Length: 146
Picture (spheres, rainbow, N blue to C red):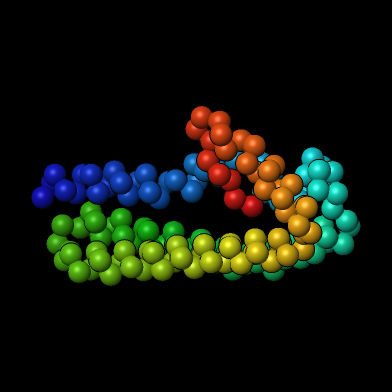
């Protein structure tokens, strides 16, 4: 039993810390459209910047709530894993809750990015994609999110 729990705990630590590590390593600004480099590169209009800000501001409360829920569900899962008296079905149900929370967070983010990309013209989208991909080929680099 111990041979199963220790790897699970290690996996859980890596799994739950991955988003934090990725965000700490991000060399790009979270609000990419406010970067002087990106703004000049894409030739964003004031109206586009305003619209991108509006989309971001409207989405942030939902994202914060999704992060809060995901973190809470992951903490509960961690506590259940440590509890040797828990049944496997309880762990399975909690994993489902964690994944549902993660799915909701990803859906919220993807919809925000979709709405933002609709503000850009095709040339701007291609240029942004190229800019985002610049560091992806470097060792240790991960695709960064908007």
